[in-house]
Image 1: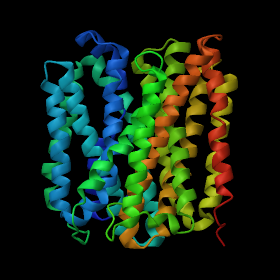
Image 2 (image 1 turned 90 degrees about the horizontal axis):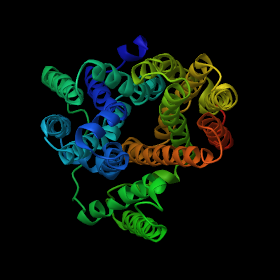
Image 3 (image 1 turned 135 degrees about the horizontal axis):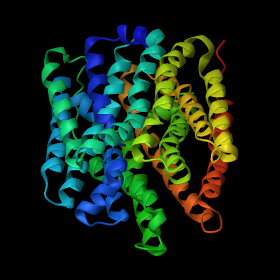
Length: 452
């Protein structure tokens, strides 16, 4: 890991530090749900919007990143992104009502959604091909560890402070970072100014609509009926279809879909989604095992996620280094095998021992290290430099959709199984079905050329 950090440019390290802090916010709110429900007298469906709204906004703006990167200098763009995040955080911290927190989280999601593809694109563009594996392994620390660190950090803060302290912490740390690191921000990306296509921008609502439709599936039949849900999904898909058609016709597309014509890009993109699915379901399912089955407090539940997060952090740079040696195909075999082992442990012995659950979480998150960032690297290595921002934007958008769908599927399965089974048996049955995801990854690996 240290070697990977040393070979990065100072500006890449700046991007990594800022992105890490912003990434933590993606998963930090779940621990605060019960406190916010009591403080504002809102139900679980309402408080869930703090995460759902964040993720929808992220997905909505991710495809904007290539245009922003080509038309706004990096220094200005990074300051705008951080400024939006700080504005949302400050609003959420001081607001007297729940609606203010929702708006604050939407602004945070907007900033994170723009930042994720941009910081990966810039780092890839400024790293030689032979060093990209190790460098993106370090970047994997941001993408993976931050998800696990969010609930842990929020659990610790909430143990001794109020929910407002959560937002205060992120505001102070990020403000200090952006002020201290101003001199390290370089305009490394070559601008390629183009006209802003408003119709394409408006049609991006289709991405948000699809993600929102996926996220509310558990509510269909309660607050939504199936007719309304189908209409929402069809309209969103229709808007997306028009978006795709317009990109194919534009001389300078908002999002260049020609990346799909490069051999190896599509399977690698899908593999990042599969690996992210394993990571995000681990961060959702493991606290349920720890709290609902073994009766642990949220703080201890969060702390038990630390070993898996550390394991992921240690493996990410090593997996990146192995990419150039054994190729993506063999890495996927290793990663999917670890994920299958993790799900088997949870489905058979997960309710018997906390330590089995701990090993399963480490296996799931460790498997992610061998797939996600190596697949991102491999996907972008087949693209010319000018298409890297577009390829990265598509990967991050699709990864978000697949990850969100995985959470929804897990929620539906747990709820359905729990109607006839105990909660522990419902969790075990759900993890059994999730074995299909890494099995799909194994099938995709067959479409990847072996390294010669």
